[in-house]
Length: 292
Image (cartoon, rainbow, N blue to C red; front, side, top):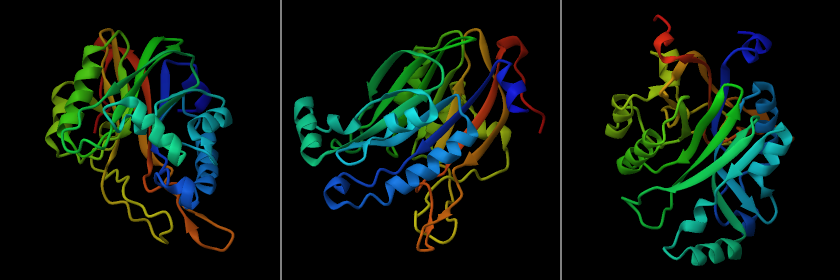
């Protein structure tokens, strides 16, 4: 559907993308895996994709690089909310705050929106496997022309209990419009918690549009001369609202092309590819799935 015609309807374009921050010691070593060059690559493609909502994971804040989510939001002309997951590494929040200031680095998920962000909330996810690996989910309520839309961005570990908690949080806060969950879930489609999303009524937008495609988004070494992503790890899920649901117009893997650096080397935007989904918001009684 042409961009103009699509924008004039009850349509929504969303993208999820893990930026690859470079690691907690990158502000000391200077080795951030060429974040600045990759930032430019990513921003240029996102300008072309024109998402209404963008979910980021591994959005970093550092002494040298600044707040990457804020910089990208300014570049794209969007509002944003961001949470520093690394501040939560210790039970006493102040210790985490001090540690991240000492190393000059923090990271966490973010949501960027071309619609006004009227509210936001942060949810701590359970640490069922490792106590020192804080995982969070950020929610934003967006004032769209179609009503208030609730979207989520998260970066979970390979942990069923975290995914189950994500499903619980979103389902408990369902409103009239669908809820959109985006993120690096570090999970294959066959994991029990991922199949439970479907049982709970969540719609995997990429899978609806591409029943037989792999949809691989990980892992891609950023300096590799060849494409090497072989499995899914990044998802856009929709939970129908009380009044409306989504019809999928398209969904595809994006941010999956390399560039050449000045010395001729290959550089990819991240070690993850992104995922785009374009949907129509439709009344529940009119919802349908494209024939396949």
